[in-house]
Length: 82
Image (cartoon, rainbow, N blue to C red; front, side, top):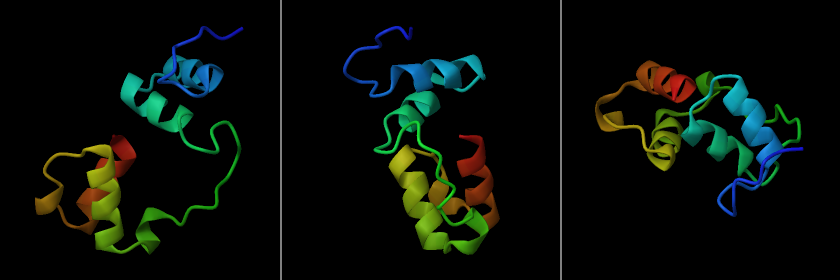
């Protein structure tokens, strides 16, 4: 049984599994709090198919610093490693 992490975590079981895999608390919480948390998807377009503006907006949403000076490939790398 998953520990209750309070109202800030929507899917405690998924959060714990992600933390066990070595993800940061922030990244695990972000994934576990998505509306479809715990469901398999794979419906998002690959980063390479998105515009630089789309990548910038995603980076802004999750708080990647220095994003305004990044080119498209740097934004992709930052998003993948955040």
